Length: 480
Image 1 (cartoon, helix red, strand yellow):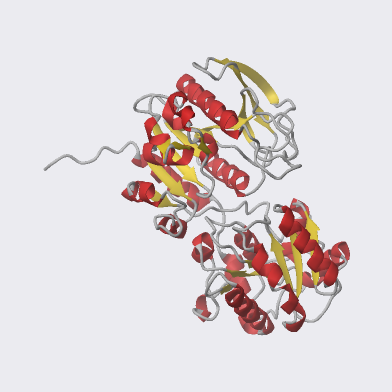
Image 2 (image 1 turned 135 degrees about the horizontal axis):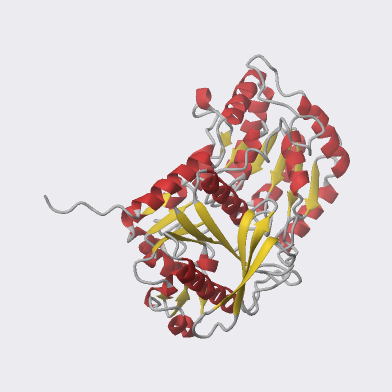
């Protein structure tokens, strides 16, 4: 099958979070299954968030295409070539798309004021590329690519993936005439809402976990789009993300001081964790101490509930436990995290930014990880943590609910701890229960073994997407 896959991020070319990792994992799995996937990315031309090959540099065997984009967009060009890790990619340039960060001004922390112009123009050019290549399916991701669907030709089959419903692409109503022949669905509440329009137009709508697909159909979690999502009925499905299990493999991970495998049933724990904790402790200036090492690798914002965790940092000595936090995002939360670490150097450490190698080291060293999200479309860190034998403490939302089994509710299937609510009291209770689980060597080892033994790879999700694509070509049965 020939699939055009439009996304604002793909590791390791450019990535700011889960979208980049999810795009890379699914694309690689679909290609392994024999599908022809044309990946289309914005040509950010040197984004600071690029990985080991900046988008501004040449790709192997690069070909350049000038696109005829009708209307207001102006010139557009595509660089097509082979990336050493990501494979064949199309880097699509339109006016103003190049920036030091895909979405946000790093100096202010606010979105670029012309993000609507940038991504609506890019989406118009993606549609022109689709008309040129005639793929079987056009698969667009999040609001950045949502207006592609308004420009597609009649009969072009399409899929929309929603990685985070909170980001919708609101813009002035004056954009409506410029969003293609099917522009009307993009108008909502007197403005343009890119995601709302794509939800109405796409042949299938996918969220990145089954529970999130259910949650967003409710007023409480639908971010104002629950009615649009309810209207899609069975066309809306949830498919859980996977992770790159070659990259996230504690047996072979070069970032770890000591590698290890799934412990035997009789093991009291993973001895290599102690060696890895020495490395992490030295890097952070965090002394060894009684109790487990709790790690957190997270974007710092309201969704992720990091404020709840920082509020509870004061209880770490009494658990007892130590906390190591890696992340960046909201400037206020960054300052709070620094202040807590400065005030409690024996119990709390904070490293600002995102360092992929250090994230691997944290999961290789951690006994527990805490993910206190207020909502979570899927979440990858709980799967990465379990792969490394680090027991997750999570809230009962979205993909966290779909991947973690609570040790007290279902002891024989346990893989971690699930908080009863998203509030400080519930999270404090979950932290205490997590430390008790870690203290019990038999229960701890059994839960670690279960989590490490789950197939968290992209192979099963990719098969689900294959079935979804194939369903677009099945004609409904006629009357008997």
